[in-house]
Structure formats: C-alpha cells, structure tokens
Length: 425
Image 1 (cartoon, rainbow, N blue to C red):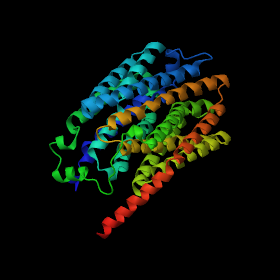
Image 2: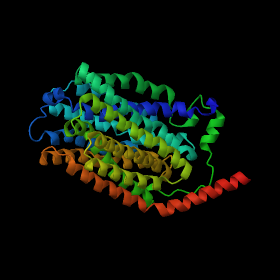
Image 3: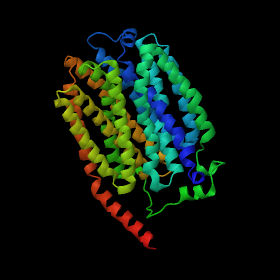
C-alpha cells in the first residue's frame, strides 16, 4: 500500500518541513520581541516603541506580498523544485543576518529580504499540490503540509523561549539558519520532482491514480474570470489581517496585557498554534467530506468574531488568553481552505500565478501588525480598541463568503449524485 502512496512522502514531507521552519523564521519574532535584551539592542524604547515593533512585521509582509506576484510567474516557468531551493537559500542567509544585527535598521533590512525569500511558500506549495494529487484528495493533501504552518510555531514558541532564556536572542536565528541548510534544501533536492512523471521511483499505478479525475469534470475558465476566486481573495485579505494581527501580538498581549510570566506565555502561545492545527485537520476532512469549503470558511469567520468578543469582555486572564488563541486558530482553517480554493479554481499550468496573486493578500497582515501597535500607543497600551477592530474585520470575511454558498451548494449536490451513480454501476 505504501508503494501506491509515495506522493505523501515525496511531496507532503518536504513541504511540511518547508512550512515548519519557514513559519518559525517568519513568526518567531512574536516571541523574540518580548525579550528585554532584544528590545534594548534594537533601540525599541520610548512612546512609539509598539509602532516600531509592528513595523517589523509590516515591512516583512509588504516584501512577502509583492514577491508573491514575482515568484508565481517564476514558478510556472522554472518549476517548484528549483524555486523552493532558491528561496530557502535566501531566507537562510537572512537568518544569519538577523542574528548578527547590531541596529534596528539592519534588522529591518533582514526582514525585508526574508519576506522576498519566503514569498515562494504559497506558490510553491500550490504548484506541488496541483501537480501531484488527485483532485478528490486536495483537502487532505493541503492539510498534510499546512499542518507544518502551525505545528512549527507551536513548538517554536516553546523552543525560542528556552533558547532566549538560556542563551541569547541572537542564537535563535543561527540555529534556524542551520535547520534550513541541513534539512530543508536537501529534502527538496533528493525527494521532489516538479511532476510525478519525472520521479524515477513513482509506480505506474500511483501515477495513473494521480492523473485520474473521478466525477464530473468541467472545463475551467481562467481563474481570474471566476468571481469566486475574488471572493476568496477578499477573504484572504481579511484572514491575513486577522492572522498577523493576532499571531504577532499574542505573546505581548499575554505578558503585558494579561500579566502572564514568560513560561505561561509560551504555553498559551503554543496552545494557540495547536488550535490552528486542529482547525486545519478538521477542515481538511470536512472539505473533502461535505464538498462545502465556502460554508466552512463562513462559519470560521463567525467563530472568530465570537471568540474575540469573549476575549474582550472576559475578566479572567486565562479565558481571555485562550479565547484569543481560538480566534487565531480559526484563521488557520481559513488559510487551509483558501489554498484549497487556489487549486480548485486554477489548472496545474496556472496554479503558481493563482497562488502568487493570492499570496499578495498578506500585505494587509503587515498593516494589522503596525495598526495594532499604533493603536496601543494611542490608548496607553490597552489592547481593547484593537480587538474590537478585529471583530469588525472578521465580520467582513463572514459576509463575503455568503455570496459563494448558493453555487457551492448546487455543485455539492451534483458531485454526490455522480458518486451515487458510480456506486450503483
């Protein structure tokens, strides 16, 4: 049986670690920015310090979002395998650069270059999934590697806290660079190929399954001409704002807003990423089972607003902290579903460009980090106004997905009828 399912090893495993370490590289700053030594070394003091902290993520996401447009075209031309190794090499260098930084400006430059390098992540993953998996298993295929997107920060929050407490903030960057160099690049070189037809160890039976398309097949129009793609694009704008706003400020919210010690902060932060992982796995299963990913996305945005409402009104710090973590977790599910939509609305030939354009939505996440920092400075360190803003933003995502439900429901009925017909025959 394993010989007929090697795609889960050759492809899912490398891009799992791709996201596992890539997300720690990207989001580990949320833990590092709580370290007094880092704040002192970078000159992050004074009345505008929160805005300057938020700017670190803002400038990263601007570079990340803009580079998604560039990388999407490159991947369709160069191939996902070579592009992945090139991007990993770029962000490995930036980890060393960040660890050697002696000024705020130098650290900002390292975040810009990191954003450019990590702009490959969504397009590369979308391209691999589009080429290597049968369309009826796309939900599980996406979940298998997007899990690394959340398991990485979940464990990373704990590991980075230990490293900073026992060594220095500099060491965390050097260790992350080593992981990318020793593990990520070799896995892509030795295990992956751009297409299953090019892999020397893939069986003919597995290749035939990958290329089969069970159920009704409709001729796809250009993804840019499908209004549902743009609904998903708007939803990703909203999700990016919510995700980066919550993930970047969560450790600071716990330590400064709710008075948690570093150990408790790391525990709740790690738990929040595990919430996201659970939402990813559940949505991966339900998307394949129900054929209603749009409905699932609408529910997740509604839950996000609910959890944020509980957090802003709760007087118990633990309830508030866990509620914020659950709100962040819902956006893990939205991110997973959005990547599923990318493959659904594109073809293997255009998947890189479709994912690159979708990745551009991350630019709004940077604004979330900066705006929340700026609002904190204006409100004397209070997180309340920022959370109320996030509630309003999440409701926009909920309303946007309502416009996809009628057509999705009709398609789900057609798919189920076709499945029953095949079962009878």
